[in-house]
Amino acid sequence: MISSVAAMSEQSAASTEEVASSTQEQFNYITSISERSNELAQHANTLYEEVKKFKI
Image (tube, rainbow, N blue to C red):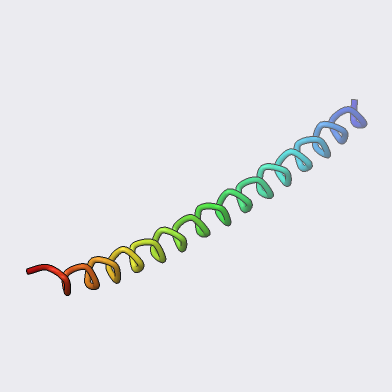
């Protein structure tokens, strides 16, 4: 009985660690996407300002 409880506890701990790792990886992806979006917005603003120079 005690060994099965210990095994379940170990399995639970391993699962928790796996979830934490996946969560961190997803957070890293979201951060990267956010940074890329900000860069793209800056490029769009620069392009917009350049195009405005040619409007009559």
